[in-house]
Length: 558
Image (cartoon, rainbow, N blue to C red; front, side, top):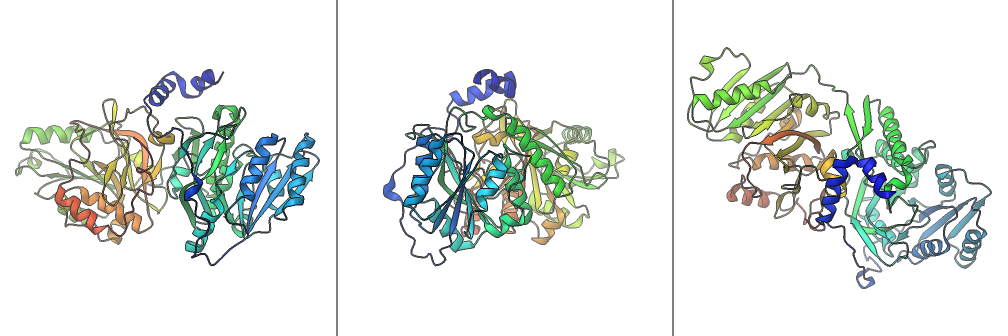
C-alpha cells in the first residue's frame, strides 16, 4: 500500500527518479549515533534563566512512548522548566495513571485531563494555557528531546533574545534504538517556509508573541504547526535557528515520520494554512501541490506586469554573424513588451552590427571588463529590475521575465535566480558560501532528482545564485553602491549576493528550468579566477562562516 501510495503521489516518473536517488545514496540519510560524553551540562555565560514551558497534548499514547517522552523532558540539563500535559480524553486509563505518577514525583509537571478529544488544535491550546513560562516549547506525545535541548535554547536566548527558536531534528525508530535521516535545516528562510514546513520541530516561542497570534488556529488540523509558524512570521522576524539536532521524531506505524502518506489530509491542511497566510498579508496568490507530498507551489500575481525592465546580455563574439545569430535567438525568447536590451561584447570591436538593424532598445558595448560595464549600466538605467544573461545560456521559456518578476513580491527579496540545466543534469541551482568555498551544491545532479529534503525542487532562500542568469533590484543595487570593481570576473555578482545577506535581504531561488547551458563545464567554479577567489575570501573572512547558513555542506554528504 505504501508503494502504491507513493506512486500515486509522485507519479510514475517522479517515483522512479526518487527511487533511483535513494538507491544511489544521495545525501546523508544514514543512521547516526549519539554520545552523551560531549553534552555540555552548563554554560558559564548564562545570566538570564527563563522558565520554559514544554506543552504536550496526549491521546492514547503507547506506554513506552509516553514514558520515554516524559523522561526526555525531566532529564534536561537545564532544569528551570515546566512540563504541561493535557490528556485529550484518552480511552486508555494507563495514560492517566502514568502521568499522575510522574506528577506526584516531580513538581515541574502540570497535568490536566479532559473527558473527550477536541482535536489537536484545541487540545494544544488548552495545554498552552497551563503554561507559566516566558517561553513555550512544543513537543509531540511520542517524540523525544535531546538532554541539552533546553540548554541550547537558553544559550541562544541569552545571546540574541529571539522571539522564535527552532533546531535541527532527526527520526528515531519505534524501539528508540536507531536515529535516522538527520534534517540539517537552513537559517530563517521565509521563501523556503512558503514551499513547505521545513521548521517542523523543535519549536520554542516567546509566550507573548504566541499569544499575539492567538495560539493555534482551528480548521487546519494536520498542519496546525505549519499554520502557526506562518502566522508567527507575520508578527516577528526575530527567528533563530540552532544548527544542532535537539529533537527526535518518532517513526511509528501511524506517524508521518514513518510515511507522510499516512496522513494525506495534512497536505490539504497545509495548502489551507498557506492560503490563510497570504490572505492575512492581503496578497493574491494561487497555492497548488508542489513537486512532492507536503510541498507547495505558489503562483504570485505579478505586481510589475507593465514595468519596463533592463536586460544585459554578456558574451564574447568575434564576428558579425555570431552576434547577429545570438541577438535573433535572444529576441525570440523575450515575450515581455517593455524592455531595454544591452549587449556587452568582450570580443573584438563590432561597430557595424547596430547599423544593420533598426533597433531603438538595443545598445552594443565593447569592453574588456564585464563587471565594470554592467555596473556602469545598472547605475545609469531607471528600471527597477535588471536581468543579466550570459550568452552561454539558452532561454527555455519565453515567459522567463514574467516568471522571475512575479517572485519579486516583496521589498526584502532583492535577487532572484532560476534553475539552470544542461541536458539531463543540473548546471546550477543555488550556491553555498563558506570561509573557503563557493559550492554549486546541486551541480551535476540529475535534473529530476529531488535533492536533500526536496531542496532541488522548491523555491527557497540561498546565499547566492549563478551569475549566468539573474535578476536584481536596482534600488538595492544603488543602496550598496553597486558591484565591487576590484574583481576581474563574475564573482563580483557572488560578492553582490553577500552584500544582500549583510543587509538582511534575501536571495531567492526558484525551481523553474529557465535556462540551458550551451557549453557545459563539469568543473566547479572554473569561471572564477584564483585571484578573484583570493580577494573574495579575504574581504568576507569576518562574515562568512565555517558552514553555509542555508545549506549545510559540512553536515550533508554529497
